[in-house]
Image (cartoon, rainbow, N blue to C red):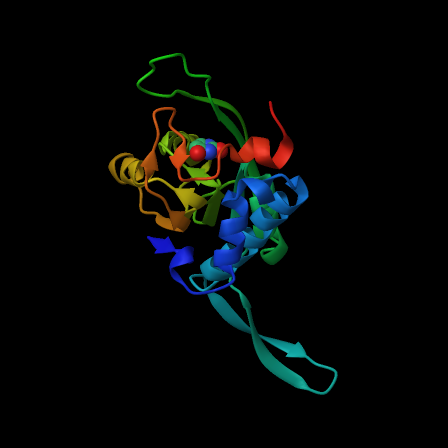
Length: 215
Ligand code: URA
């Protein structure tokens, strides 16, 4: 598992801002920080991808230079992933994109588990592709697993990159136990635990509401 916040960088500033209730009041800043962190995470993942040499003509001469071997497929889990995904799209600007709608059902008092409702999927053929699945909060891990299970109907990726900004250890463990294909997990920060309502603590609250307002 790669953890972005373990490096000493400006990431500390952006991660702090997305968690801080005072800064969260500025919704534009919150979304922009998600986007910036998406760009940084995309850069980190780009180190794991393949490149090939091509011949190009500069204004001065012909030379060889490297380009991405293939366009990745970006999958965005609506709605909270939209600004984070935009950061990835800024870097992988020729990527194919897929969109998934999954949300957690409202839990009732005393519920021991949450249920994920999977509503929508529009994704390209994933067979043999580098697939980057973007969802900012890895809480129980159930929506990641359900999303991957549904996506596999579109083919088996060459590599599946699962990316989140904040992860709970419970979610990381759930992926380990339930995902039956190889994957790489990229995490902004690994937090302490889930609370009784399955929110990540310390976490940042409800990422979708902070991006777009209450449902
Ligand atoms: N989704 C969120 O937005 N926040 C959490 O803490 C967990 C899931």
